[in-house]
Image (cartoon, helix red, strand yellow):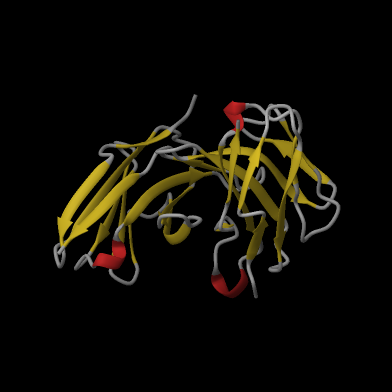
Length: 117
Length: 113
């Protein structure tokens, strides 16, 4: 299993541009999450999903949108990029407690480093 | 709002010594707590978790202690190795409602040879 994959790894955007950060998981997890991590800080939840077709806002949703059309994919859309959205973005998933693992254990992707100038 | 915070931003230890990383949490309704390790340029990696009905849990070279009276969590790493150098985050959450986690700001662990 590849686990959680994210593309691209790096991206530079100009102010006002839009882009989609891709996230895919192959663990058949129901729950997926998007976080942002600013330098020297912890992770802040942007959006999350408990299953295909169901999404909800996290702590810092402004300026972002998500969709969940399949179990595997959870893309994050940035509209009208702003310098405040410069950050590292992590996607994560969690699911049923396979092999005794707790369902709340989140598995993270490698991240996308985004710079908006 | 509710938050999970850490006492020290940086911890330096000698190789072979034991490390103790502390965390304070404020949400008394949290029913599980997780420690993650994040190496430079990578995503967080699960280390160990503990449910709120426990006060101690041990893994391979790691032990997590939970003191609900003072809302304090600690991660102990035995015989710290250079590969343990990373940022460590505590997180808390409640079962249900998407199993969302609230993360602290992290502690940088530096292992000196």
